[in-house]
Image 1 (cartoon, helix red, strand yellow):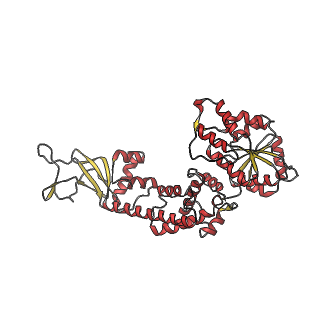
Image 2 (cartoon, rainbow, N blue to C red):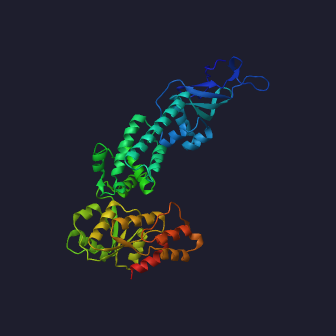
Image 3 (cartoon, rainbow, N blue to C red):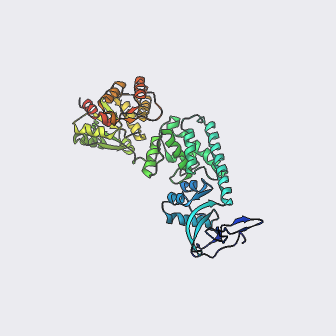
Length: 442
């Protein structure tokens, strides 16, 4: 039998042909035989006869496709979630000449269940080309980072690795080289990197990316810069529009003036302007207020000199303080401080307020406090090694969460860092809630 001979089996998809699996026999090939010497067809290879367009695959699907020369069908079905979806994708890949599917034969005349697939020679060549293009783009990113003086930044390799995994660098080498250069130009201008003042996203795009809309959602350049932003602050890459806006804000980029807010309670500025009256009324009603950048731009807030302002990381602290009748001003960062939060705290500091901050006893919390102390005239409250040790002594050993990540030196209390390293335990603000609320009610 000639290797190119196709079998007329029932169930072969349109645009494909079934070929028997042959074995070498001297100078030619033959069908496999059973122990009695009888020829038998037990499996076939389904191949293309009418090449079609490559199906649209996610980066995860592409990594699975090119991650191995061959796959068992059980692995294929598990990856795509079901046999039916895996079969539909496999047929389209087969038609495109990317894979050949090995199938069983039922009753000698009908196509049976798939057993697996393997990449064609053309697909293997394409996989090698993609790998070379990715390596070239990664090298270009390192060169651009070196030129910008960022090659040794602790987030640089994490950014490149994340971009490779996502498929963002898996394009033609020429386009990727230019793309990563523009991405690095944008990254160097992020306030979280440059230390500069917050700027608008369209302004960043116009000055560093070649056009005011170059960093709009859906662009490959935008995804590259956002992946760098996530690596810079040690966060996961966002999967929602709200998450992306939050990430932009955390690195100093203002997407708009209304979506990001700062949460405050008991703020009573003087004066008869609209916002000041609104804040006093909500404070009297024991209600918190979310202020956006547009609110802060509407009017200045006049506060008494040396007004005590307590800042925390978790909204539960603010909520519990209101429930307990606390009247002191409280600002909640809700995690990493956004642009509007930093601007608000800076205004309070400029007005002469006495700002005291505290957060979770973990490394991100220590890093946030270090940044605030370095950029805003503030101190800490109940955020020291004595409070940490007291919390450990009051908690049950079974409730302890392990402290992970790279230790961060607490600039205001180095002994706190040593105590946390020694204990290896996280203490969240909620574990100290009674103690914190009591201090706010004094």
